[in-house]
Amino acid sequence: MKNDYEVLRMRHERNKGKTQEQAADRAGMSVRTARKYERLAKLPSQLKQPRTHRTRPNPFDADWPWVVAQLACDPALQAKTLFAELVQQYPGRYQPNQLRTLQRHIATWRAQHGPAKECF
Image (cartoon, rainbow, N blue to C red):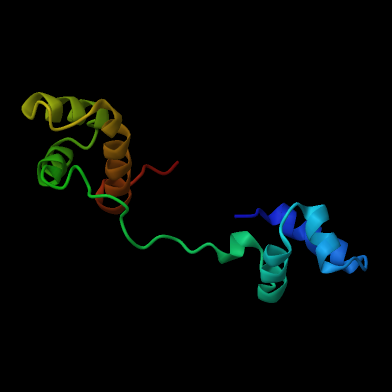
């Protein structure tokens, strides 16, 4: 996929009066790609749609109710502590690289259901 800069460069060359082939060559893309972006009249960043589905199953689905219960009891718990407890309870189920996933899930949960932030 081309980036916005390349498409803008191709448009700039076309505005200077270059042919489609010349503009595409100057922007480092094929003529077919240049034709596509001219026809669409949009930048690549405008074409990208956000994902509405998960790309892989959530590894914490089975234990998420336990995590939520722990957070409800003590909202100050860190994800690292909860992850260590999960690894201890279920050896072999979780890998060390899944800690970041749990941190993201907990951050989302705190934003939606956690205690309110203190305002100064």
